Amino acid sequence: MLYKLDWDMTKKRFEAFWNREILDRCMVAVTARKDHPVTSEYPPLPSADLVARWTDPDYIIPSRRRGFEKMYYGGDAFPVIQLNLGASGHAGFFKGSKFQFAENTVWFFKSLDNPRELEFDRDSFLYRKHLELARALAEDSRGDYIISMPDTTGNADALSHLLGPERMFECFLEDKDAAKEALDKIEYAYEEIQREAYSIIKDANYGGACVGWLDVWAPGFFAQMQSDMSVMISKPMFDEFVMPELTRQSEFLDFALYHLDGIEQRRHLDSLLSLPRLRCIQWTQVVGHPPATAFIPELRRIQQAGKCLLISVSPDQIEPLMRELSSRGLYLLTWAATEDDAREIVKNVTKWTHE
Image 1: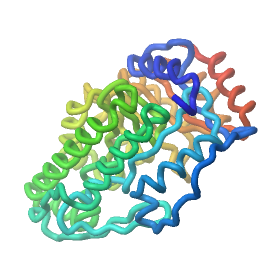
Image 2: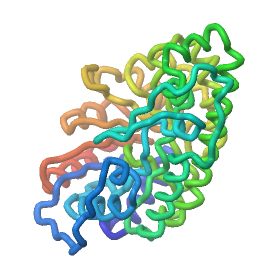
Image 3: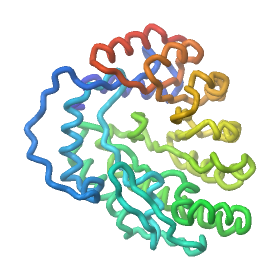
């Protein structure tokens, strides 16, 4: 790998991580700005409107390669370009879907009222752009960097984009069959884009797949699962409308990770841990919520259920978390101000690793 010389060792650690084994230490990714970056001579970036900045590989590739050269990838961190055209972006794969590119996100707007009118459109702009961008990145990368899987996940999240959350919850209560039929159609779109994207990028990704925004790679067919809107629903409603999706996706993938977004999702933890093919839970520290160190019992439950655990942490949280948790199947994402600080963090993680 061009921007990470020790990728072969990190790749072996990922393989051990998914088996909840310890190769030499628990996994830790720590990034920092390089002390003395050497920048290649790239042509000037073309001027680009918002759509081009999100979808044009002639803009995205040189922009991201410039960034890679300025970054130190410590521990198990690695360079990645995200195949991201909006969170729960498969909402844009349906006829009549409405969306808008912004500086830092893609906004989706209510586009229909009747869930039975939902119609998958393989020729939709966002579906085509996902695959076009995947092909361009795979052709350019050839192993220089990793390409993420699409951020097209969370079927109920996508349905809330399409119907609006209020209308979706009305359907959950008053027209369950229509809601479930719509969720099945969205699941079909999820499986189609994941399957097609993986077939395009897997060779450039050393035979595996990656969830880019979480800096996690797996040696096979891998993607994340989520239900961010589940913070607004009860456990019985979660079990009825969301668990079928998660069960199906965890069986569809070789490696399945659940993005647990916020402490309100704790009430669904028993349901999540019951999924036999769920391999990993990513615990999200939401701004304004207590830190991960405040939830040691829940984090231990995840590990005791045989699941890997991925947590984004500030450097000061690493030692207390490692002291309380097993190092098996543990992956910590963090950052540092300098390369030396990053190396010191990795050194400490090695020292604190235990069974």
